[in-house]
Image 1 (cartoon, rainbow, N blue to C red):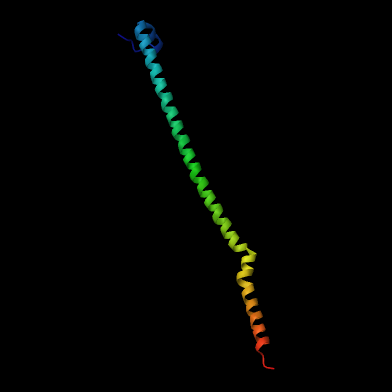
Image 2: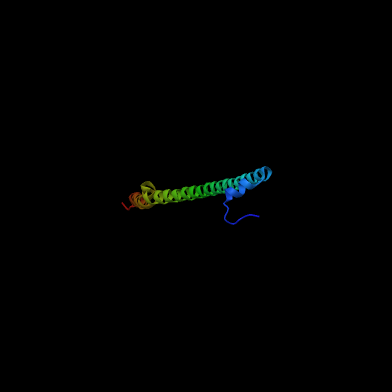
Length: 105
């Protein structure tokens, strides 16, 4: 039988040629299985990274749009001028015109 002190190489050399071929094919099969599993893991990781990038880009674009809208509201001088300054001035002008038109002689 096999001696426990033999190395794997010595055991392999003592095998018959058919058994050696089968052992080699078995080793190749296991290596191919490991390569296939590694490739699958890499593909899964690439898919996860792609999904993460898409979600991050969507969040960034939403954030940029929110910031732009806030800044547009806050620093839009003409909207502020139109909504806050012009109405009181127009009101005073109309009151002055009405006063001039209907004042007692």
